[in-house]
Image (cartoon, rainbow, N blue to C red):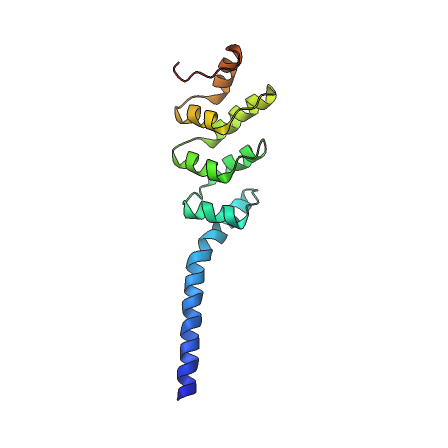
Length: 138
């Protein structure tokens, strides 16, 4: 009788651990899998950040892949921008224009113009004409 209770307790503890592990790790591995389907190789930490912020849309992964092809902007900056309604493909286009002109700019400036609804390709062209001064008031 004591052995049966012991085995039952072990089985229940195992089941409990399995459920907790599945609930915690499954979304992380699902985010990692979805990213790999779109050509991104994420670390466990990056996948955890994406899963925690519910940012697993196809558009997000495609945008991140395009941006990471040009420069290495941390996922911790891209997720909040995407969640705020930012367009990662617009960011990629702006970065492409800047690379063509051999100019560097911080992500925050591009993000501000993107969230303001501006076309970053055109904003880079305007900034070039104004001696690389970006103007949000126009």
